[in-house]
Image (cartoon, helix red, strand yellow):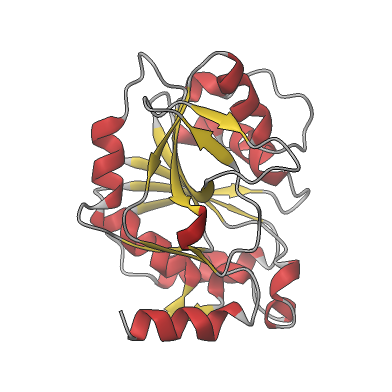
Length: 236
């Protein structure tokens, strides 16, 4: 049972301006509650008991929000006030807080609705540390609502992932939800770098896997996306 998660909440939220001029992106409200709470509610329902949250932009506001939340989970702060470290650097910085067991890593601006199965439980059932360094939740490009990219990954019949090769389109988009092995968090190339470094290593070793999300997923990256997401959620 995976009971630890990392919530990525340190970004500047530039694409969400002007809404992020006075608040961090994780606290922008969608469908009546902050984006961060959508993610935290899913983690709590999935049995997560410890959440490591990295903070940088308007960090005090994020910490105050976590303190005010009804506590069923323990929150630990990975402080990046001095320097924004991107996703890979943020994971390395938080490594001592995450422990030595596999953990979920979730983007705080992530918004998904479960399909026939509870998403995090499904991922836990599929997680196999003997074969995997990372298990990514993917959504078919055709159902990546409010997302304009060309896709991220190809997935074979066994769930093993490979990268999209430009200029081609790939059939799956990364949702911002994944399970990571702490054994992957080694040999950082710099202080500031992307999780793509870890994924590339896992691909080379044949240990990057994915699973297709059967529910809804929304890329809530810009202000115009918010009313679209709210309307779709309201009408099922």
